[in-house]
Image (tube, rainbow, N blue to C red; front, side, top):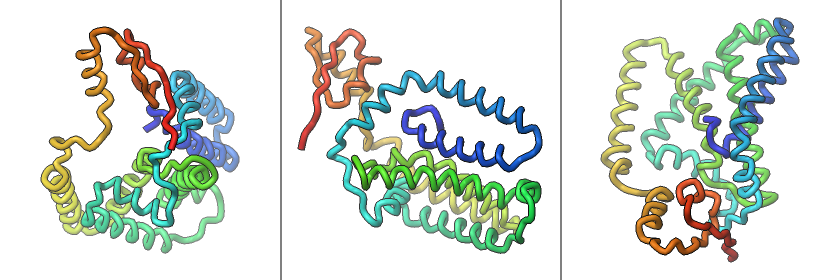
Length: 248
């Protein structure tokens, strides 16, 4: 989840959650702060190789990315599940059930009560997580280069999965829970293997394949011109990569 260079927003949202938790808790506060600094220190060390890539992405004028629209988030959500109406309907059903159960929770009078209420506490964590990622991406899309594509929102997927898992766990009737889970898995496999043929058809950029093609056919080691030059040096180690910008 935090291994790609789009996850910096995700780390920021987690940092907000940690800070809020430390501010309100009274137990082992110094130890928590120590662990947070150690965790983010390790993350910073592993993230150093991606700093140049993030800087390049922030400056890159992605003219091919569509501008933000009023239904952009909805389209991205559908794209997460390959535009499958049944899966989106099923997830929406579980989500609304989760929200209804959430609305029925009683008030809490202290942070300890909040922390002990796992459903409410997890909701606040997921809320901060989702809000931060969506807010930052929407703000950037309307004030700078658009990032309205699913890869920039991919950090939302774990939060969505957590909500679905909690919604499932709150279904008390075992027969209903197993039946719905089975139907969901069957239709997911149907959509993945039969309708979209995910493991047969190619629908993503094939950087690895094009790199192999260049290696096999560029016998004279001619320089390669690319607008995404930072993707290739690791694979094309012996070939000079020259960056150029695509202008509309």
